[in-house]
Image (tube, rainbow, N blue to C red; front, top):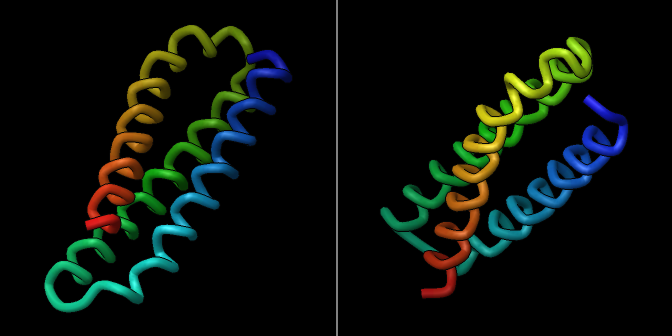
Length: 94
């Protein structure tokens, strides 16, 4: 993996963390079962972010030779996490 790829992924992780934190801060306006569901989904988003962080560190440790093999797997996980954050934001707007 090239250094610029790692830096871009680190920046993306940081941005995801900010988005998750912002969504969590908006939970104060929600109550009941909806709040419980959204809290579970936020917890899942934090777990997904951590999974991506671990995957990134693994890629950094393994170097360029494994980057091509793992980037497709990582890309799908990134997209799933992005969709989850988008869905959460949509639910909180209602």
